[in-house]
Amino acid sequence: MKITRLLGGAAVLIAGLSVPALAATWDMPTPYPDATFHTKNITEFASDVAEATDGGLEIKVHSAGSLFKHPEISKAVRSGQVPAGEFFLSLLANDNPAFGADSLPFLATSYDQAERLWAAQKDVIDGLLDEQGLMALYAVPWPPQGLYTTKEINSVEDLAGLKFRTYNATLEQFANLAGAAPTQVEVPDIPQAFSTGRVEAMITSPSTGVNSKAWDFLTHYTDIQAWIPKNIVVVNKRAFRRLDEATQTAVLEAAAEAEARGWEMSRAETSSQIEVLKENGITVSEPSEELMDGLRAIGAEMLENWKGEAGEAGATLLNAYQQ
Ligand code: PCA
Image (cartoon, rainbow, N blue to C red; front, side, top):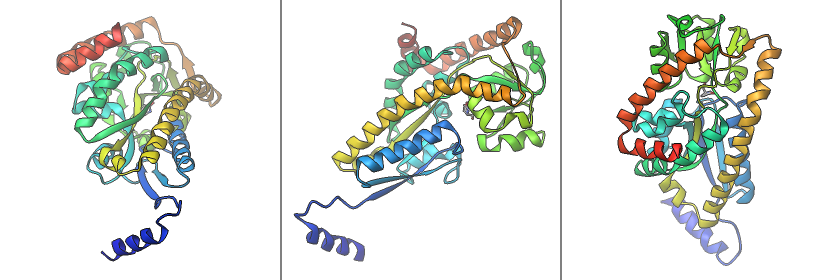
């Protein structure tokens, strides 16, 4: 009450002067460490917004799951505990399989395909997020996902029994079908999971391999380029509507720039981070035909399963992508 009255008084005092509205601060949880290119991109997005609004909207980035753990971030934004957040898009596949399309093995494996998939996915996802009180600001892909192991892998059989680090339900299914033993581990916990023997293999990007210093605990990277999954940055719709129009515009413009910048960063990371893996002694190799045939067969089976679960929304998405 007291604060409202004080603010009311201040408003009267400054009425008629062109003084900016009271500054707002948004806490924004993100799952990945500061060195991750996604996090750097978000930091730049936040400073673009601050600049465009003359400090009217400060977005405070809380990286590496420090404010909310990764699986909690979407819920925290949905409930309005925080106005914005970033998470791995396919984590929402439990709500609707359409969210997981970018994690289906070998459906979209080049950046051009990933762009087309995102174009096909976007409307469906906007609608689903809207139902949850969320709005997408932008999405940025990780580099193509490769296979990290402690030995040479030439066939799916070589993966049998390996304790396998996973990051979503789709990868868990993939690992199971390959005969490996999946365990969910968040990025900040990867080094410890390997060093304590909880896991001994993973599929992730060159970026996450480098950020995790994979050479400290494994030896081989097989460039299977299996899929190109995305992170998404969302806002709570009510929080967004509370911003004045100029601020809303500033956020949307900065978001469009962040999306374009993020895709560029991702493309550039693909080769540069594979080089860093090599420089640090990791054996980087192209996959054998036998391995690829086996992995593709698993991917084909998963796509069939996904179609069954994804129903009409999934069919619409897939048609749009395959046109
Ligand atoms: N890094 C994240 C998601 C995909 C990627 O390349 C991870 O490993 O969890």
